[in-house]
Image (tube, rainbow, N blue to C red; front, side, top):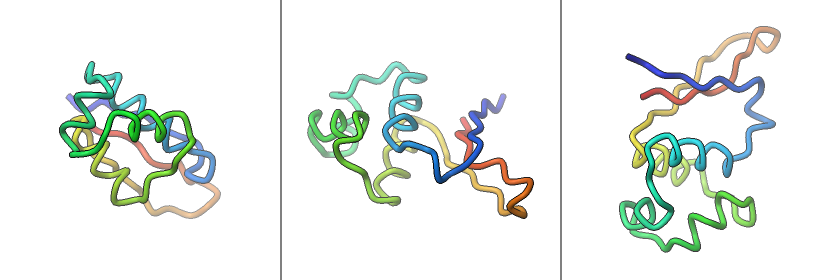
Length: 87
């Protein structure tokens, strides 16, 4: 079964919220996710709080480490749905 989380607009997507949702959905702690990625727990906390913004490749690594994929649909602006997390 595919679970999806839709967002209205990528411009308004906060990376920290996406990271938190992906991590929380899989019951990963910040420490466990950090260990999986080879970074520190404070780095994950900084991403989730918005104090630091991950690069796009880093964001994808984080989401994939939590067991999700990021899927984008390229559609005209007036019907844009934004990114979704897929399991």
